[in-house]
Length: 323
Image 1 (cartoon, rainbow, N blue to C red):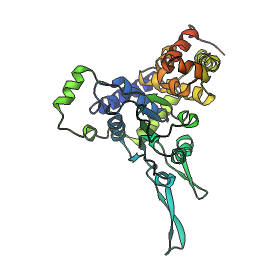
Image 2 (image 1 turned 180 degrees about the horizontal axis):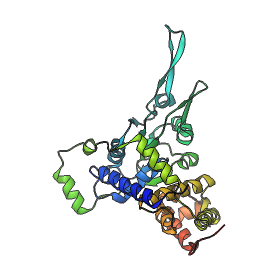
Image 3 (image 1 turned 180 degrees about the vertical axis):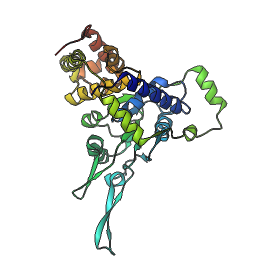
Image 4 (image 1 turned 90 degrees about the horizontal axis):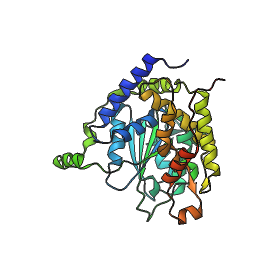
């Protein structure tokens, strides 16, 4: 059953309250906060990639504090083992059986800090839980629950001692978002409060895990016209044939695109998706799913420019399509 106009307005009001709550810690970055919360309510995961000291960890902690659930922070290092994430089975002599001890990945929101510093084997431990919300240990599957979101951070300029995330894992992140530096006025305010070393601690829980699940269900009911689906499909197809692109948008990426667009529309008080929603989300949803070929890379072509070119070359629908 499609979401109603009243439900869309309720969604919009709650979404805006969540944005304002997170903005207590991250100021002047409402658009970035909206993207991260869209990931949460789309039941996806987000990769925060930006220069050191731009507030990636603070943003992740503020989002975690906003939800009245559990959250954990994992500092990824080269010696981190997969079992350090998922947990281990320990033999209990009294019961003469193995008892599973859950790892930090069993939380509502998991902050994977500097995810590219761990070995590929440890990075791969996140694959199953990010895709299926389950962890398999000793052949037994364990549910991590709902809602569940991985917020991973990485610095694009510190490459020594890091392991590049494989394309298969990048595709499992719904969005890649850059926080960016604050403007002059916001920076002045932050400098005036330099004594406050933990701004995220001021963010109090304001929405329950059950409310997040309900909002995610409402977002999933947002109407998407067949013309919009055709637009997303044509964008994905165009990305696979572009002369600068070696790997374009996968089917999983297109599906993620539609889920995020539904949430984005509801977050703005609408019960239907528009072409503008698709275009606004394109940089965050497409940039990490596109691989440039060697010629484009050596020529200095940027992924952002290719995404903009795709949006220009693929015309959006100007009327509804009826099936």
